[in-house]
Image 1: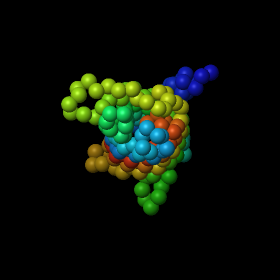
Image 2: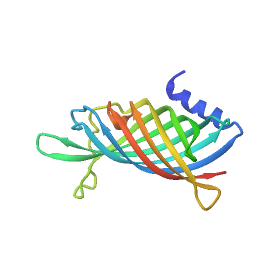
Image 3: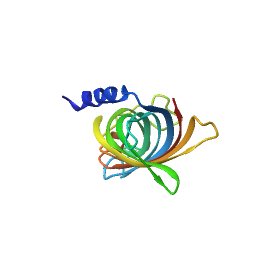
Image 4: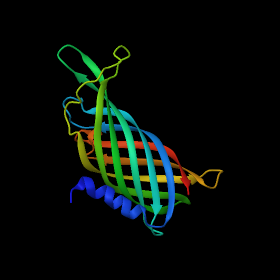
Length: 190
């Protein structure tokens, strides 16, 4: 079975199982360092993610996630130097392992990520239709993600705040390097 069809099938099968569930969303910043010649080695950007966490047992949970990201980098061409915004999407299916640290609810995340490059455009106020070819790198890839998160209770007992630090590899937004992502968000129990 192909990887592209295996991840969604596994997500549907596991998420259909009865268990504790939380819906959430997060926004954050990203930075990628790599040796991409066209990208001058550094890219920065933003991310928006929606996720669905399920507690499967007292020690293991599963997260399905859909994310949007926009990474910016400098590109040179023979006549000028300009800034490019690259837009992409990611689908992730990750194991979540909770543990307590100094009275705080902490968890580790890890698993596969399918990433897709959507479009690139010139970052300019003067060109409203500034689409450009994205250049080097794959338009889709299956990579990995790992990270740590912390969550705490808000005054409403059904809401929690979350903060996460993640490292992503082999994703289109990293163009061969690794991506560091820091995000904050909110989660609601069903």
